[in-house]
Length: 322
Image (cartoon, rainbow, N blue to C red; front, side):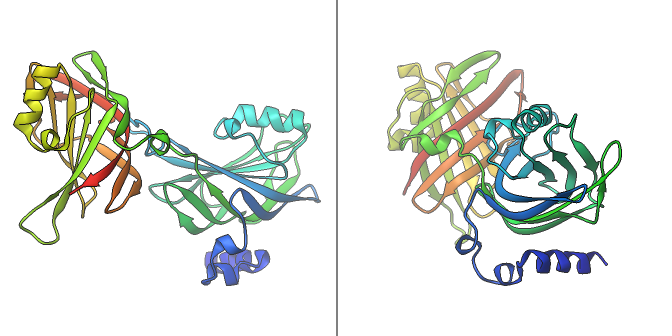
């Protein structure tokens, strides 16, 4: 039954050809939508789309927070600063005279968490929680962009009476993280050790091959002062540079095939520390090719290594040197 409803949604929006193989970008520009909203018998064209990552992969995400994607379809362009803020978006729609539908999707499960209607001359939004009354047809869904089709599964109730429904095809890009604006071999972020924070502003990356043909690592070195490639490669040389230059450096190994951080080491003027394992360490790539790595690393909150407490959150950009 649900499949037939999805099929009707595709047919209603004329999406069969696009989702069957023709590229989306040839049909709809990012930031736009092709959809309709019906409120109390009145039809509104939804022509704009915007999206936001809440608890993004490019942010620290502690206390078990799940990442959510917020998609907003509207009849006018919506200020990006309003995305994710229900009260502010409701006030803007009420005062600015526009209509908008917000759909929240849980990234881990791909299920719709909620649907909200914002409109002029209304109080708070009409809200429907849960996945049962929603249709969500996924096209592309990455760290950079999202496109597809969303719609209500039939009519939805409004507070005080009345019905509303919507369906729309949309395409939107997410905001770029700070790493996109960084020059090569630069970083922005901090490493905190026992309550003392140090800015990390330099980045180096290199490829570390192994004896196994399909097993390699990209090693990332983030530091408070610039270090050359030879120093970055050699743990002992890096520790010596930390003593001599009074710098702090964080060294992370990323398993290229699995995409996980497998080793973390830091050096300070007092010495080097390598915790056992890499519990909590997480990273996200905006760009990761054979030539360059650009993204974000985080401990996702404070971690322990023996008596020491540490944390880090750093955006970086670096060519991958061989």
